Image (tube, rainbow, N blue to C red; front, side, top):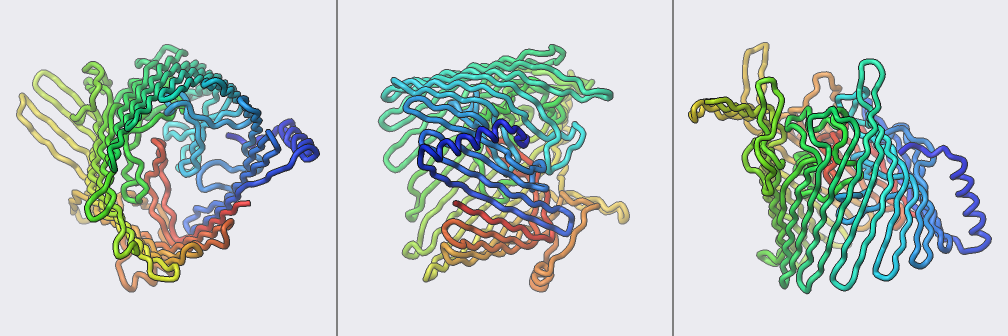
Length: 599
């Protein structure tokens, strides 16, 4: 969203405040966040975010100011960024300004702002709601500018988006609920102005998206069932070789049996059928009419909070994905709590490549995940035990994950006697652990250790007349020295993350963090690498090759103010949140400061 420069909104804002001062009691609250970072490699940022809430009887005013030159991620901002007026009176509520709403599980509409990945799909407009006699009706209308990043468009970098689309949006939603049942029906229409790259002047395509969805929820004595279906139709230019209309289905059933909880999710999103190569599948600029950014439905893989698992997060494709996940929670051994997670997914079709490197689908729609590499399968098994020991003074979390992911496919070519298959493959064994021990007088020792064996590279398979000619992996971690003509094979990368901290809850804590890889495959020969005095000191006791070290201090000044300071280096990598992924650049030889306040 761009900064608001409308004097009309500001005058309205002041008018409502002054009027309400004379007639009602004001309740004011808010929060502020100051973030500053500076590194010797030139990556510096300074951003301030202020949120305010003013409650005036039946009115609420929410505003957000941002002063960032530049922010850690995103555009320069200087002034009022967002504002919303809320009015509520009995069954009627009205919102005017920046709208964020969710209908069902997001197959039609799911809006949020996630600054960690610089994602924002909010709409500036009007939202009306009427809740009466077991029926809730919503009406939404407005416009928005959505920003994304693409290496195929000019101005690409990893810090701010470089491509925008403009949308005029209208939608309505109705929910009926009684006793154990709830039913909903949603409709959303977006008129999109989509810019196509051109050698001379960019061409603009006008695309109309219409999404109709329905859902049902039933809550029983020991289980809950949820089903949602959405049909999407997109119309515009007709010069593309794939269908721009499709559907999505999501189902969840959660059952409760004594101390055990079992949850199962099934998804089948088939909003657009794009060729499986990375250049086509993620090219949302030239392939317009895909799943809308307003659609952020549930995903079928676990979002991890640990460092090493987060870096190999599965990049979810909302246009075409088929899969399920199972979660089991209950009592484990020695008084622990057990959490078991299994997830698997793939595309809905297998694709083959022609001699001219174009692609075509070879089978009908599948309703179960495809296990062969041609379907880009993903699979993860995750086990976690957490519990307490030594009279509850020790809290521990011990977990392990086995992850297998075909991320891209390059070739899947058949002829009368031969088959050639090449794809990008990633497999990892990851063991995250966490221990916290209470000493006395509020003092705690916290230790985190994560270990990972990562195999990643290009897998090539070929057979002739059913006789396998080769079936092997070329690792991404292999290296070749052209001066000495030495080829070093590294089948796996061995990664470690370790932190040890001391704290006095809830006042302060200090922690040392170490992030090490056996081989840095993201090495940039033009990057400037400097060594902090902190790393120089640590180098007297340990090797710091391919290691990022930092010290972090957190101090709760009081219940309303929190100060955080980090000094050192941090490894970048992939960061994913609810299916949206961004590459985060490393932070080398610098410090980060963050001050959070509530008022």
